[in-house]
Image 1 (cartoon, rainbow, N blue to C red):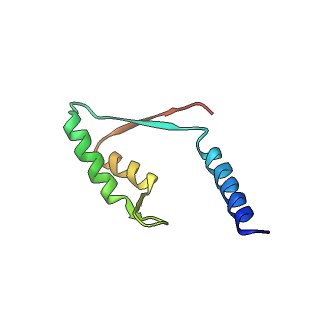
Image 2: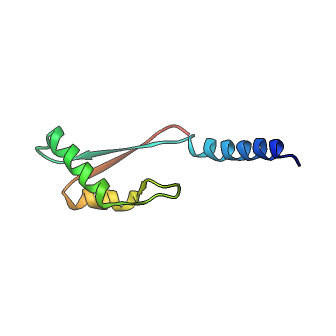
Length: 85
């Protein structure tokens, strides 16, 4: 198999894998009595920082469960809105 064929095959496999991930999305809505937009932004940033770890290809990745737990500890309730499949 030529290098070009291997590259095309690898791209096809990667696209198929990512397509499966992109067919559904969930939105998390945070609520807290008396909340201002500035407070929400500050708390989100704090929890993202606390729940981040080194990413596979460099950069960082957020541990979703740790992020939600952090927001819960700050007094937020959550509502998950499930998107289309």
